[in-house]
Amino acid sequence: MKRIAIVIAFNGFRDEEFFVPYNDLSNGFDVQVFSTQIGEANGKLGGIFLVSHTIQDIEVDKFDALMLIGGPGGYTYLGNLILQDIINKFYSLKKLVSAICMAPLILAEAGIMNGKRATVFIGDKDRFISKGVVYTGRDVEMDGNIITADGAGSSEFFSNKVREYLHG
Image (tube, rainbow, N blue to C red):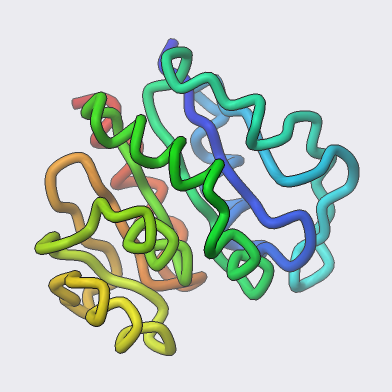
């Protein structure tokens, strides 16, 4: 069974961007959720998820895909060198790297998006482009082993694209 590591903010993850893929992909994949702390993570809209692993626990060789969830809390991952290292390891091993809403900005900051076609939350478009990304403005975009989505309204399409990629 393929394994997916999902990273959420401990406070302020976007509920739909997490719960839609989590519920969908838990049917057919081994999905584990990681954050900066262990305990009850809080979504922007009031959702709660009990996190039992920190991002330091992600063992890249044991997963087939990495998924980063957006929301206002996701900005706390900008500058997080541990997560940047994890992203780069997934990418260099040609494993799936995916992100939704503002989270593609974290991928760009990690240095894997230069020249790649991708999308992001519209409010981060200029920052995204400044990192060398070819912004497409589409709901969901795929370039090689990277899948990005623009936000909550694309959660189901994003999840389907990740499922499709992993079933290859």
